[in-house]
Image: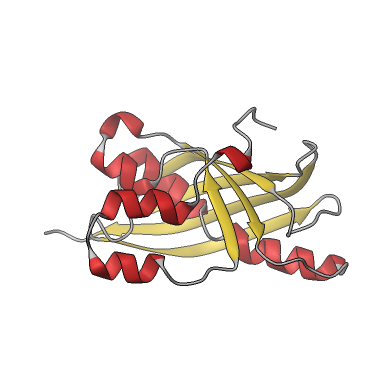
Length: 169
């Protein structure tokens, strides 16, 4: 497990984005909507790397957890981790190129997504989602992720291929 800052020490995704978008009412409206997942980025946001090329990286570390106490149903936790696994994986491909959703005429879609569940975990406890993008080209990108429990145990492995297109201005 990568050595990163604890989630409690990091700002929420919404608070970081609000600093970046300023007074844009469309973004403020979108960011004010309730979200089931609390995401705390250790890595730069795609918007930060879009504005500052020195922040471009092919790695993305994000802590996440569901905001409600969940029942002791292992399948429910697996399903919720599968849902959350798609939140930030394509961002890892975008980060390496300084692209951002809503800021650089980017469209994208998941082409393939596979997961392996190695041990029980709780989706309402923090999971570190360590992601990397080892390759991109031809309007496609590959991203890999590993979800670690707070004690550092590997719980889930993820691989995704995505399509990324940038519209000409």
